[in-house]
Image (cartoon, rainbow, N blue to C red; front, side, top):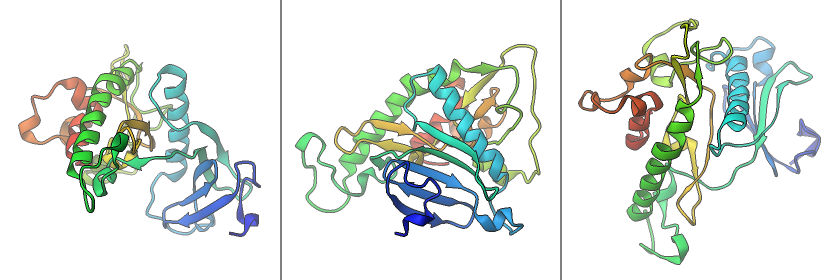
Amino acid sequence: MDQSLDPFEGRYGQLLEVKDIGSKEYITTEYSFTKRQPLRVVQGGATGWRWGPQRLHNEARALQLIVENTTIPVPKLLEFGKDSNGRYYVTMERIYGVCLSEIGKECRRPFGVEHVRLGECSTCQQIAQQNADRFITEEVIPKLQSLTSKETGLEGFVLPPTRIIEMRDQDSWPVKRSKSNDYSFIHGDFARHNIMMNPITLQIEKVFDWEHAGGVGDGTYTVLLIPREEAKINKLLIASRIGSVAKNEV
């Protein structure tokens, strides 16, 4: 690939791929992964990706907040801002592994144990899912719940979970405020494709894609995301959307 296309001029290693998915660009180098606005958007072109600059800034600030206040495994933030062409971007370390959504596509032979020789492996998927559910319930959720705020969203920007946005067509989402720290931090898009697993141990490596992160109160958005039969689930789990993780409903 033409290294002259590299916006970082080699400081994160060799440029491997620049992928335009329409709403944004994904730039992969040896040691980094970047989300960036396409140039045509900055020049006035249409995009289906609403609140692009705010999403990128929100993810960057969420990663900083998580690293500074918890031990939740997330990609290391490298830089964020606006490039010389006016495109907003966020760059983080390149992470390795297999997404939880893909872990059962083949037998990963964890610790050398082969469950099936060819094809999909339900055993690997089940083990990985159980490990992920346990880690999220015991480690991630309590740490997120410890991050509280007197207002929803993050630094004045509120981006609800995807399903809420699809259900309610709004240009913006108002910040709600309280006199005490009534709002707890959530990931906002806890889906299998946003959880990176170690293919050998089948344990969580990283939780990524924090564009929707921010503070919410019990039931502010999340109560609408669970099936009716799960309505009695613990409020702590509702707020962090563990039910959606388990069923891959996001």
